[in-house]
Image 1 (cartoon, rainbow over the protein chains, first blue to last red):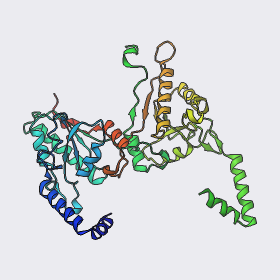
Image 2: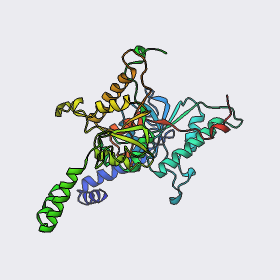
Image 3: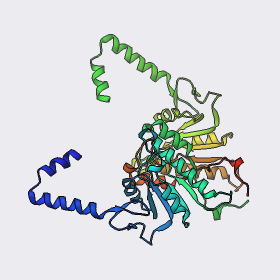
Image 4: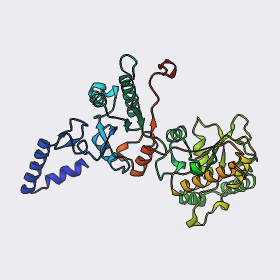
Length: 197
Length: 197
């Protein structure tokens, strides 16, 4: 991909290259990370954080801006985001201070957040980062004196069989997660028509 | 794959082809579907159904024998199986009578089953078949007079992000299912050390 772009640039006309360079410079000058969520925009807070039609009580935590774009395609989700800037990875020297975890706790401490949805990658780094953040939020929410300071739900995305896939070809770990996460099917007759005990 | 096998057979020596044909004939003669679960074996009930070390109270319902093999790789699962022989597909003319649904209800009615895990493919046919079976079991379990005849849990495998995948590349439907199926993370301090309200 980057190769294709490089050769495309090399073949550009003088006029086009000046336009292109100008646009890149302009974007770099104007587009900055949102001071609330960390997503890129030419305004801060970004257009998502500034959108009053969204449910600001539900914050979806993602590793990267690309992940935010992926989640934004899920029509049922109407909350806001928090971009961590990666996942914990001791082998690569990425620790908690390298991610926007403190700013997440800061957002939570300002109140009004009902649920934190941890939408990190379903791999080792993503999972240990989710565990780390969940524990941080819980000890933060519990306060210093054991008095509950915040009432907040911390959830993580379901792991399991991808939609439209075939069970036969699922890897063992995915099947294991699908078993562990199995859910009871809702009963057939709606609650009101069911005989009450 | 089938092409490769075909050409391999055509290139066989006389001796080998006789052995091969003999083995195929032998297998066909001996291996029959288990009268309990529908899986293939040269004994009936099959070695799985006959294994007293397994938990016969948990039955995992799969579409095909290949799916059973996939599930059998999940180490945590120690129950037994029921092979439906496919999924409902009105367009292909596959109705309830073409699948081993009645024999599943028969197994349930014999008692001793605590949970039915519906492990069908996460596609349209698999999902509508799961719904159909779940409803059948519930109305069967409810009995004719509204009196609860059987206490039985019907679950389905989790849908969501496959283990080790990247959220960025997940399709919209899989992400939607991962959101819908999100689960609360267990609280950090174990229950016994948590202050009781």
